[in-house]
Length: 257
Image (tube, rainbow, N blue to C red; front, side):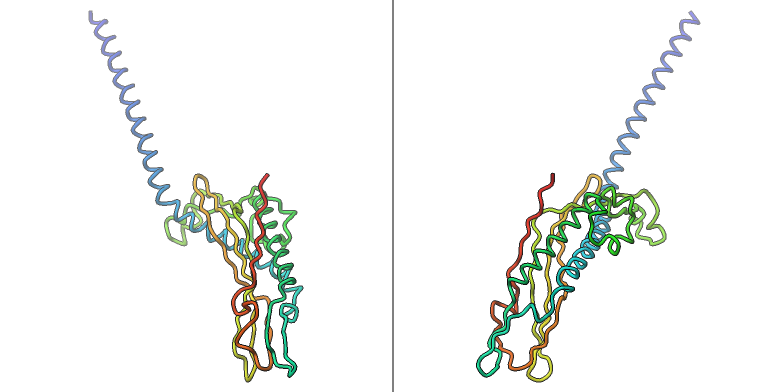
């Protein structure tokens, strides 16, 4: 009888320990899941802010390089304007050279999209400005389509801890159409003269991608491309809205394979 009771005690003790182990294990898993969701909810916006800043930084560099290569280095202020004068040599109207502007805007916008798409794919050899644009970026990461890695140490808000912790990869993806146009600002310049400053405005839409989280952002860049001094009586009216914007050029985003 004693042996039978001993066996029953051992059996019941084993069952109790097993039940306690299962309950503890389940509670630990639940706590981990709740903790992960809480941290993810608090951390994702902070990490996304860093990721968004890096995406805008890289995109702005690519945009400015494309504008420099396809417009600033090719076009002078004289080429951008069509000035109409009367028989007395007085300026009657100032207009954009729309044909020329549209040509260079299309080239620039296509260049921006092509280079950002190649960065997205990790195709470094196809990037036009890889030598000057990507020198501060990790080549191995870029080949995987990763433009940046945000360390989770940024959550502490302390510069000393910013580089600590696991790294979260940041990727970008082009979405929507790219739009570009030219605008001009006219200011008084000395006596009976005006200074016209020309800008290229380019807008693209991107998606910043983190693991389990993404966000659509709009990137706008306004880059100066030319200056021109108009001497003589400058009309208050600028033909075709020179004091505002040129017609926009919209270049559709290429469909992904």
